[in-house]
Image 1 (tube, rainbow, N blue to C red):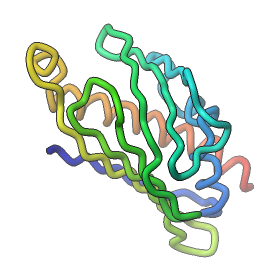
Image 2 (cartoon, rainbow, N blue to C red):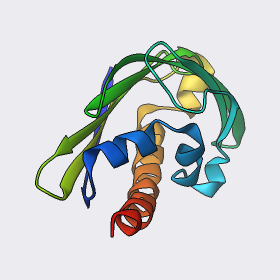
Image 3 (tube, one colour):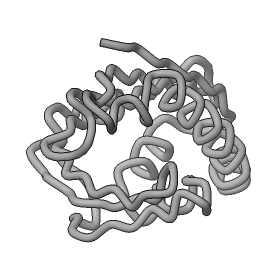
Length: 152
């Protein structure tokens, strides 16, 4: 199992950021355009026990996933876990920590196991990690633009 972690400090209220991240429509705004994220089935606001289906374009292929919110504690964290998809294992913990009066730290902790076989040869740990780094760099910039502007 591979672990990937990313952190971002923002001038924003924890509850505002947490509620923003629970809405699939907002996740589309902070995902790189080339990923072509589309929610096929999802509630308006994610809550514990909810399942959602989405599709992304990655590495020249459209890939479909179903994830479930396995844990949610407002406004601290929620955990999504892959139910169906290409990865052998995928768990993503979205954390929000109030670190000052107007400052938070967003933490994304992802544990994954790449696929096996021929697909695993093409979609290996290095390529997945590289995609995560690129995707989170974009996400962080978008979050700064959207959340810091709305709290100003």
